[in-house]
Image (cartoon, rainbow, N blue to C red; front, side, top):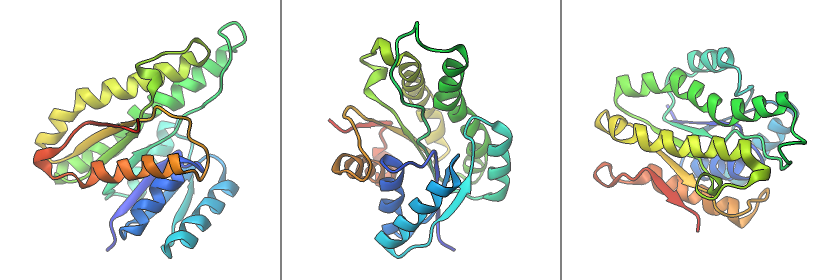
Length: 214
Protein backbone atom coordinates (compact mmCIF):
# COMPACT_ATOMS: atom_id res chain seq x y z
CA UNK A 1 0.00 0.00 0.00
CA UNK A 2 1.11 3.54 -0.71
CA UNK A 3 2.06 5.75 2.17
CA UNK A 4 -0.54 8.40 3.02
CA UNK A 5 0.17 12.12 3.05
CA UNK A 6 -2.68 13.90 4.82
CA UNK A 7 -2.99 17.65 4.34
CA UNK A 8 -5.20 19.58 6.74
CA UNK A 9 -6.14 22.99 5.43
CA UNK A 10 -5.11 22.45 1.81
CA UNK A 11 -4.98 25.69 -0.14
CA UNK A 12 -3.57 26.65 -3.55
CA UNK A 13 -0.25 27.75 -2.07
CA UNK A 14 1.78 25.77 0.47
CA UNK A 15 -0.81 23.02 0.87
CA UNK A 16 -1.08 22.22 -2.83
CA UNK A 17 2.65 22.50 -3.49
CA UNK A 18 3.51 20.23 -0.56
CA UNK A 19 0.91 17.65 -1.62
CA UNK A 20 2.40 17.67 -5.13
CA UNK A 21 5.94 17.29 -3.75
CA UNK A 22 5.01 14.23 -1.70
CA UNK A 23 2.88 12.76 -4.50
CA UNK A 24 5.95 12.90 -6.76
CA UNK A 25 7.65 10.64 -4.23
CA UNK A 26 4.85 8.10 -4.46
CA UNK A 27 2.68 9.17 -1.52
CA UNK A 28 -1.09 9.00 -1.77
CA UNK A 29 -2.34 12.54 -1.01
CA UNK A 30 -5.48 13.17 1.01
CA UNK A 31 -6.47 16.83 0.79
CA UNK A 32 -8.84 18.44 3.27
CA UNK A 33 -10.47 21.86 3.57
CA UNK A 34 -13.87 23.42 4.13
CA UNK A 35 -14.65 24.23 0.49
CA UNK A 36 -15.32 20.93 -1.36
CA UNK A 37 -15.55 22.46 -4.82
CA UNK A 38 -12.19 24.21 -4.59
CA UNK A 39 -10.74 21.10 -2.99
CA UNK A 40 -11.74 18.94 -5.95
CA UNK A 41 -9.97 21.40 -8.22
CA UNK A 42 -6.79 21.12 -6.15
CA UNK A 43 -7.00 17.32 -6.30
CA UNK A 44 -7.20 17.59 -10.09
CA UNK A 45 -4.08 19.75 -10.07
CA UNK A 46 -2.19 17.13 -8.06
CA UNK A 47 -3.21 14.46 -10.57
CA UNK A 48 -2.22 16.61 -13.54
CA UNK A 49 1.16 17.48 -12.01
CA UNK A 50 2.10 13.99 -10.80
CA UNK A 51 -0.18 11.36 -12.31
CA UNK A 52 -1.18 10.41 -8.75
CA UNK A 53 -4.83 10.41 -7.74
CA UNK A 54 -5.60 12.59 -4.74
CA UNK A 55 -8.57 12.29 -2.43
CA UNK A 56 -10.58 15.38 -1.52
CA UNK A 57 -12.30 15.30 1.87
CA UNK A 58 -14.33 18.16 3.29
CA UNK A 59 -13.08 19.07 6.78
CA UNK A 60 -13.45 21.92 9.23
CA UNK A 61 -10.13 21.94 11.09
CA UNK A 62 -11.75 23.72 14.00
CA UNK A 63 -14.17 20.87 14.67
CA UNK A 64 -12.52 18.18 16.78
CA UNK A 65 -15.32 15.71 16.03
CA UNK A 66 -14.52 15.86 12.32
CA UNK A 67 -10.82 15.35 13.03
CA UNK A 68 -11.54 12.32 15.22
CA UNK A 69 -13.74 10.87 12.46
CA UNK A 70 -10.99 11.51 9.92
CA UNK A 71 -8.44 9.73 12.14
CA UNK A 72 -10.79 6.75 12.37
CA UNK A 73 -11.16 6.74 8.58
CA UNK A 74 -7.38 6.93 7.99
CA UNK A 75 -6.00 4.81 10.81
CA UNK A 76 -2.48 4.88 9.35
CA UNK A 77 -1.15 8.27 8.26
CA UNK A 78 2.52 8.40 7.38
CA UNK A 79 2.82 12.18 7.02
CA UNK A 80 0.46 14.70 8.60
CA UNK A 81 0.68 18.29 7.35
CA UNK A 82 -1.22 20.93 9.33
CA UNK A 83 -1.52 24.00 7.14
CA UNK A 84 -4.85 25.48 8.24
CA UNK A 85 -4.98 29.18 9.07
CA UNK A 86 -7.22 32.19 8.59
CA UNK A 87 -5.21 35.05 7.11
CA UNK A 88 -6.54 38.58 7.13
CA UNK A 89 -5.26 41.85 8.47
CA UNK A 90 -7.33 44.29 10.49
CA UNK A 91 -6.91 46.47 13.54
CA UNK A 92 -7.97 45.21 16.94
CA UNK A 93 -10.77 47.76 17.04
CA UNK A 94 -12.17 46.49 13.72
CA UNK A 95 -12.07 42.81 14.67
CA UNK A 96 -15.26 41.08 15.76
CA UNK A 97 -15.14 38.82 18.80
CA UNK A 98 -16.35 35.85 16.75
CA UNK A 99 -13.62 36.39 14.16
CA UNK A 100 -10.90 36.50 16.80
CA UNK A 101 -12.14 33.24 18.28
CA UNK A 102 -12.34 31.51 14.89
CA UNK A 103 -8.87 32.70 13.86
CA UNK A 104 -7.31 31.17 16.98
CA UNK A 105 -9.50 28.05 16.76
CA UNK A 106 -8.37 27.20 13.23
CA UNK A 107 -4.79 28.47 13.56
CA UNK A 108 -3.67 26.73 16.74
CA UNK A 109 -6.50 24.94 18.58
CA UNK A 110 -7.26 22.91 15.45
CA UNK A 111 -3.62 21.89 15.30
CA UNK A 112 -3.84 20.62 18.88
CA UNK A 113 -7.01 18.74 17.93
CA UNK A 114 -5.20 17.19 14.95
CA UNK A 115 -2.25 16.09 17.09
CA UNK A 116 -4.56 14.57 19.68
CA UNK A 117 -6.42 12.70 16.91
CA UNK A 118 -3.48 11.45 14.84
CA UNK A 119 -0.32 11.42 16.97
CA UNK A 120 -1.27 8.49 19.27
CA UNK A 121 -1.40 6.03 16.35
CA UNK A 122 1.97 7.26 15.06
CA UNK A 123 3.53 7.00 18.50
CA UNK A 124 2.06 3.54 19.03
CA UNK A 125 3.60 2.15 15.86
CA UNK A 126 6.74 4.31 16.27
CA UNK A 127 6.62 5.80 12.80
CA UNK A 128 5.47 9.01 11.20
CA UNK A 129 6.17 12.63 10.36
CA UNK A 130 4.15 15.63 11.49
CA UNK A 131 4.76 18.86 9.58
CA UNK A 132 3.33 22.20 10.72
CA UNK A 133 3.23 25.49 8.83
CA UNK A 134 4.77 28.18 10.98
CA UNK A 135 5.45 31.81 10.19
CA UNK A 136 7.56 34.88 10.89
CA UNK A 137 4.79 36.40 13.01
CA UNK A 138 5.89 34.01 15.76
CA UNK A 139 9.14 35.98 15.98
CA UNK A 140 8.17 39.39 14.57
CA UNK A 141 4.58 40.18 15.55
CA UNK A 142 2.44 42.66 13.64
CA UNK A 143 -0.53 44.32 15.39
CA UNK A 144 -2.87 43.93 12.42
CA UNK A 145 -2.29 40.16 12.37
CA UNK A 146 -2.48 39.59 16.12
CA UNK A 147 -4.60 36.40 16.05
CA UNK A 148 -2.50 34.84 13.28
CA UNK A 149 0.64 35.80 15.20
CA UNK A 150 -0.67 34.09 18.33
CA UNK A 151 -1.39 30.97 16.26
CA UNK A 152 2.06 30.90 14.65
CA UNK A 153 3.76 31.48 18.00
CA UNK A 154 1.76 28.55 19.34
CA UNK A 155 2.82 26.36 16.41
CA UNK A 156 6.47 27.14 17.04
CA UNK A 157 6.20 26.63 20.80
CA UNK A 158 4.34 23.35 20.42
CA UNK A 159 6.77 21.98 17.84
CA UNK A 160 9.83 22.66 19.98
CA UNK A 161 8.08 21.37 23.11
CA UNK A 162 7.07 18.04 21.55
CA UNK A 163 10.12 17.43 19.37
CA UNK A 164 12.39 15.56 21.79
CA UNK A 165 9.66 13.41 23.32
CA UNK A 166 8.24 12.42 19.94
CA UNK A 167 11.72 11.72 18.55
CA UNK A 168 12.32 9.16 21.30
CA UNK A 169 9.33 7.30 19.88
CA UNK A 170 10.50 7.61 16.26
CA UNK A 171 7.99 10.30 15.28
CA UNK A 172 9.41 13.46 13.71
CA UNK A 173 7.49 16.69 14.41
CA UNK A 174 8.80 19.82 12.72
CA UNK A 175 7.66 23.13 11.29
CA UNK A 176 8.65 25.47 8.49
CA UNK A 177 9.03 29.09 9.53
CA UNK A 178 7.53 30.90 6.52
CA UNK A 179 9.04 34.39 6.40
CA UNK A 180 7.93 35.50 2.93
CA UNK A 181 4.61 36.19 1.27
CA UNK A 182 3.46 32.99 -0.44
CA UNK A 183 1.07 33.21 -3.37
CA UNK A 184 -0.86 30.34 -4.99
CA UNK A 185 1.20 28.09 -7.26
CA UNK A 186 4.29 30.25 -6.76
CA UNK A 187 8.02 29.50 -6.55
CA UNK A 188 7.82 30.49 -2.87
CA UNK A 189 5.15 27.84 -2.26
CA UNK A 190 7.30 25.24 -4.06
CA UNK A 191 10.27 26.23 -1.89
CA UNK A 192 8.30 25.68 1.33
CA UNK A 193 7.15 22.32 -0.07
CA UNK A 194 10.77 21.38 -0.66
CA UNK A 195 11.62 22.30 2.93
CA UNK A 196 8.80 20.06 4.13
CA UNK A 197 10.22 17.22 2.08
CA UNK A 198 13.70 17.95 3.44
CA UNK A 199 12.41 17.70 7.02
CA UNK A 200 10.64 14.42 6.28
CA UNK A 201 13.73 12.99 4.58
CA UNK A 202 16.22 13.78 7.35
CA UNK A 203 17.93 10.70 8.84
CA UNK A 204 16.69 10.17 12.38
CA UNK A 205 19.98 11.07 14.01
CA UNK A 206 19.93 14.39 12.16
CA UNK A 207 16.33 15.42 12.78
CA UNK A 208 15.65 19.12 13.35
CA UNK A 209 12.44 20.71 14.57
CA UNK A 210 12.44 23.77 12.32
CA UNK A 211 13.46 25.01 8.89
CA UNK A 212 13.09 28.54 7.54
CA UNK A 213 12.47 29.73 4.00
CA UNK A 214 14.70 32.80 4.35
